[in-house]
Length: 127
Image (cartoon, rainbow, N blue to C red; front, top):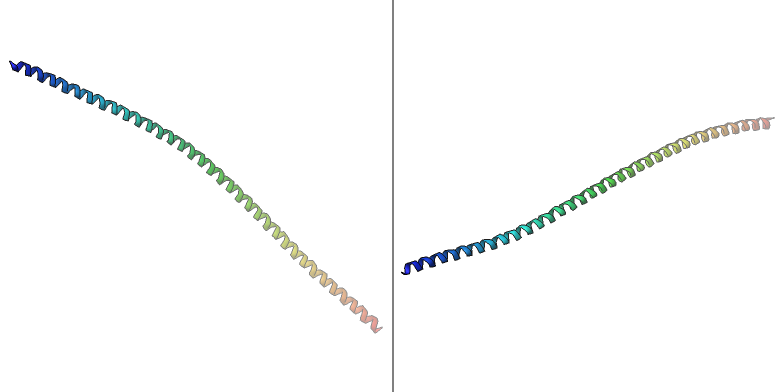
């Protein structure tokens, strides 16, 4: 018989099918390995990108703090200048007030002197 030959052929087909499956699986395994490597490279890139972003953020944060301190320093200098100007204005106002008092005293003194002179003059005229 032909039955034994068929059985042999069936076995060969099975072996061929298994070899095909093995080849397919091997191909899939290689593709997965390549995908994994690509993902790992992408992940490493993202991690590196995240690191450099972190470095940039820290740098920006430092620059922001420095700018904030500089601004506070400028504001303090501005307030000190304002206080100085206010003090100068007060001194000027006080000097003006004192000058006004001196002027008033001088005018009063001058009026008295003129009054006295006027009296003397009229006394002289009467005599």
